[in-house]
Image (cartoon, rainbow, N blue to C red; front, side):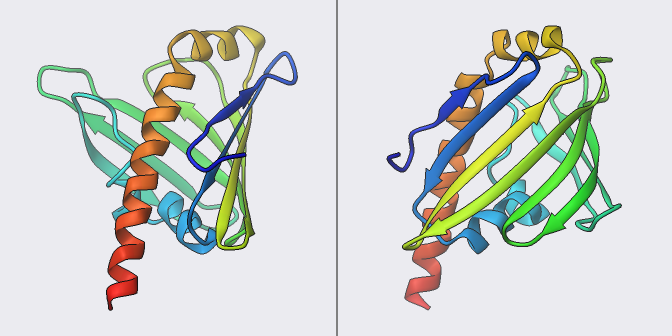
Length: 164
């Protein structure tokens, strides 16, 4: 798989698996997913600011994100970490505060080969209907754009590190 290409599969009735290669070591990619100061720089919602980014990264810990936009309703997401094995993987639950769709289970893995990291996010939604609604709402487009921003951030962080 080429770096920058997002692959999306739906292997089961409630599942989505997204895979993307980043030209960076897995520790850097893992940190970008788990450190608030980095996460806020790439995980955005158009027309909103990332107002709350709380992460207690440990098994049994939790997270909460809130995006705010002028004249718009806040969008919030929360979850609990079931497993954290840095920098190889973390597993968490995920639910939206403004959409009563139930809780999803997300397993994120980071595999490094020759300085490149294959990131895989396997999501099990509460039902096929929820999975299909998320897909219809633009999961592929949004994930492609968001992971593109992550790749830009990682590239800029590596440039800073190599010049230091």
